[in-house]
Structure formats: C-alpha cells, structure tokens
Length: 301
Image 1 (cartoon, rainbow, N blue to C red):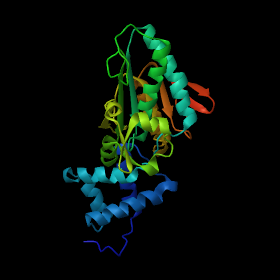
Image 2 (image 1 turned 120 degrees about the horizontal axis):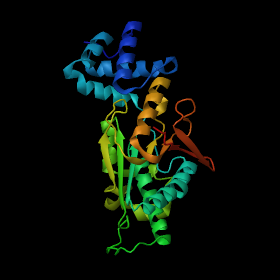
Image 3 (image 1 turned 90 degrees about the horizontal axis):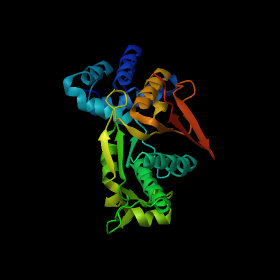
Image 4 (image 1 turned 180 degrees about the vertical axis):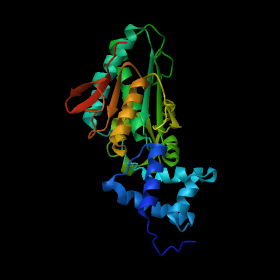
C-alpha cells in the first residue's frame, strides 16, 4: 500500500499508457503543456485507490471492476468553469438574430418544435441561460406574430403551439447532479439581472432555485462526445469551451459529428477562443457585434 507522504514517480511508459487510455475513453488529449495537470490528477487518484504503482492503477482502470474509478478519473480531468450569461455578445446573437430567424423559418413551414442541445453543460448555468433566452425570444416573437390558438391560464412560458426541448449533457456525473438540482448561491448570480431573477428563480434562503416551469424545459443526460451515439435533429447546438480538451484530429471528428447532429441550416455555437478554421468547410460563419456562430451548410449529394 502507498504511504500518503511519499509521492510515487510515474515512468514514461506508464504515463504514455494512461495518457492513451484517457484519449481513447473520452478524446481528451494532454500534450506537453498539460502533462503536469494530468500527472497531478493521476497522483491524487493513485493515493485514493491505495495503489503503489501507476501500472497497477492502469490495470485497475482497464478491468471490469475499474469502471467507477475510470469515471472518477475523467471527472477529475474536466475543469467545470461556467456561469450564467457567459459571453454576452454571442448570447445576443443567439437570442436576437439566430432564434428570430429560426422561429420565422419554422413558422413558415408550420413546424412548431424547437430542439436545442447544450454539450458540456457542467453545473447547468449555460442550458438554463439558453432556456431563459428561448422563453424571452418566443414571447417577443409571439407579440409580433400572434397565432389563432387559445392561450391557457395561467400563461405558460412557451406559447402554444410551440414546443421547446433543451437537452443538456456532460461526461461528469457529479456536475449533472448539481445541474439537475438547479440551486445556486448568490456568488454565482452576479451576471443575472434583477428581471431574470424575478421571472425565472425562486429565492430560497440565501440561494436561488430555478423555477419548475423553466426547469421542465431542460433534460440532463450523460454523454461522451467521443462516441457516435449523440442527440440528433437539433436546431441549435452549444458546445462551448469543449474542443480545447481535444487534439486537432479529435476536434475534426467532433465537428463532423456535430454537423450530422444538426438539422438543415442549424447553428453551432463554440467557445470565444475556439474556431472552426481549418477543421471544417461545412459551416458558414455568422458574426455580429463580437458574437460568432456557425451555420450548417447544406452539401449537395
């Protein structure tokens, strides 16, 4: 058994084995710049498991009994930094341009469904932000484009006949549990203005809970972006600050998979520091007031 005070050194072959296993499992690639981070997380898990070599840890991870530990390691490798209304120029583009265009296009076809996917949703602030903005966009659109449908009482967040589904997924089970709970401390509410707090949150002591009506629009699930079994037929995908974990080959594979997960002329939103330049020519960049999105181009044949 390893003693907690002694740090066990990882050999180059052991590091390569574990680096490759992580890459094969979830697509995360740790190059030389991030090798120290991976080694630090491996050291922590080795101590928790009470093992005395990294090869023994590798054997555990690749065994049937080691599935839970592999999941725990992956959770420790993701940095779950998120917030409400993150990157406001991009969210303005999402609400005022993309959603407006999408709602108009769908109404022309008498297609009243809207399906969005937030990939890498962390503790839920991003998909709940998306839900708030969809509700606002639909309310404004409905005012200008009233439909001959009787409005139920009390007035619902989503006016009939529109139906909205937001799927939010992550590879980390613990953040998904927090997201499903949907309760946030005051310190995480700085970017949420007073009007949004009134409409979409209940104050519970010193914490803010997402209102049930909004919560019901968002469905949380586990997804590993490395696999092919991903949510299909999405009008909009948010996959922000996820590709930074992948090498270029895995980024290209992911962008191609996301293309197949989008409906015709659907939209992809990626992180502020991320770009599709050099990764794919199947998207058209949409840019306005420092906000950027990518629209799926329909390829003939």
